Length: 426
Image (cartoon, rainbow, N blue to C red; front, side):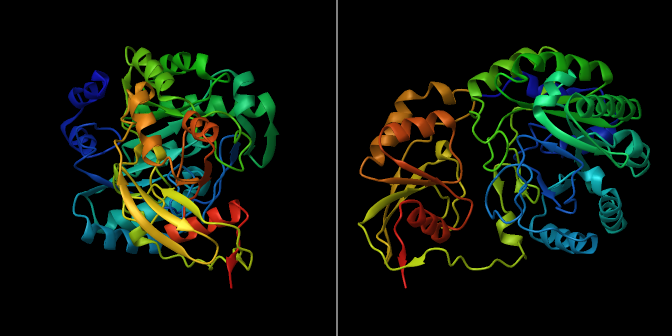
C-alpha cells in the first residue's frame, strides 16, 4: 500500500533541473525508487554526538541499518569504487554519504570525495546525511558545491526529550551532556535546515520514532521543520541495536509508524519506502548489492572450535540466495533448513512461505504469521538478519531459539552452534 502523500513531491513546482535530479533520487522519489540506484560511500567514520539508539559496527557484513559498514574508504578509494559500480550498474544516479559517523564531522574527507567524483561525472546527484550539529558551519559550503539534497535527523525539539535520546555531543572542542547538549544540537539543526531551504536545497528530515520517549512529540517536530522549509520527512522505527543504550527497548511497530505518517502527511510530504540503509549500501533500495563490492579483509572466526557434541539441531535460515543471512524474518518468502550437530552442517531443503510483512498491513497478518510458524514447526532455531519484537516474542513463546546474524550463512550457523552450547569439532 502506498500513502498518497508519496506522490505529492513528484508534482512539486521545482525548477526543472532540480525536479529532474529529484525524480532520479530513490529516497526523495517514490516513483524512482525502483528505477534508480544509489551508492553510499563510507568515508565518514567519526561522529560528534552519541545517540542512545546507535551502535556503529564496521565489521557487520550484512546487517541493514544506519551506522553499519564493512569498510572505511579514503576519498580516492571511494572514487575508484564508484567508477567500478557505475560501470556495473548504469542506473546508478545518486552518491550519498551517510556515515558510518556523521558527514559533517568528517567534512574535509567528504568534500574531497565529492569533488573527485564531480570532476569526472558531472551528472551525478549528491546527497549527504547529517545529525545537523555542524550545519551552521558548513551549510554555505554545501550550497557552493551544488549539493541539492541533504538529510538531517531531528528527533526532538524539546531539550528534555532530546536528553533522553542523546548521551552527549562534542562541539567547539567541548563535551556536553543532558539538556545542555540537546539544546545546542536542536538549535543548530533548526538553524541549518532553515538556511539550506532558503538557498534552494531540498531537505529531508529523518525522525526515529521511539515509543514512550518522542512518539507523542513527532507531529510537533514535523510542523516545525515544515515551517522552516523542509521538503519531506521520513519517520522511521527504532531498531534496537545490540550494544546500544536502547538495545532492550521494543522495536517500533509499523502500525504506529503508519499512523503517525498518515497524520503528518497532512502537513508535509512523507517518505514511506525507506529501508534504513547501511552506510555502504549499493543498488536499488529493495536490493542492496554492497556485499559484491566489499574489499575489507575479514579474519576467520575461530571461536567455535571445540570437541563437545550434544545433539542435532534444525535451523531455519532467512536468506535470499543461501549465501548471506540477509533477510528480516518478516520479509522471508522461503526458509532454508539446515541440520547442525557440532561436527557437520547439512542442508536439508528450502521451504516456501508467504511473506507476512508487506508494509502498512504487516501488523494485521495474523494468518500469515501463524502459517510461517507451521512451515518451521520442526525447527529448533531461527537464524535471521533481524526480527521484530512481536515476532521474537511469538517465536520464543513457542520454544524457538532466535539468533540474529549479519554474516554469511556458514558463519551464522557457527553463531547458532555457540548460542546453543554446541562446539564445532576440530
